Length: 234
Image (cartoon, rainbow, N blue to C red; front, side, top):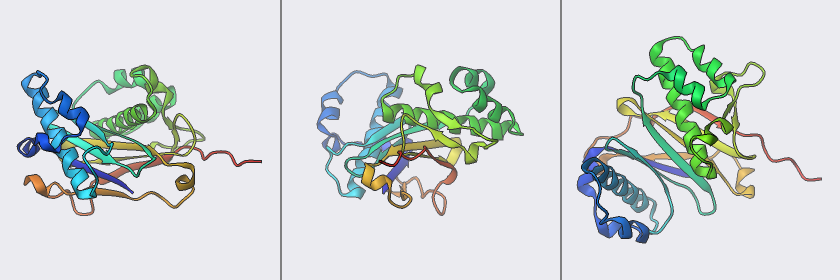
């Protein structure tokens, strides 16, 4: 099971150095600009809450993404590869950005979406998906952005595309969060687990910081994708 937690600025008041892993304790005293320090504290508090709820030690590796006082933390079973990304929908020249990071097919699919708001959300969905894949696979930014994303073959749309990933058996999902935030997670399970049933994703509530729960049923799922399975042996 993949476990995710999203939190906003209120999480800064739950930051505690005692909850940090060793690597973060070593960095806790670094000088940062006020906004960068806020993001640091919010993200580490959200990460600590996710670990506590999952019953794992502070040294357990997880994935973090933070921006503008908000953070997303993701935790996968031992032996899995996972990365998350978080972005806020803001008016941008999405056509110019898509030309920078998207394939021709991805650009055409985005351009064909009716409505400015729907097109903006779809762009950020694709962007977060690509960033999560880059982080998970250790690919460079921005050079790797065109190497991963959506395989729009045979007339497939964004929601029915095959995942273009660094290898077989990758999975990814994207969600709409409150206040215009978009989240994505990309993961690859060990070979034995990759052949099992669909992976469950559990979103933890933000109640611990007094922010109120996520929408009933969790954030709205925008898309789920999988890369081609590994070829069967001889």
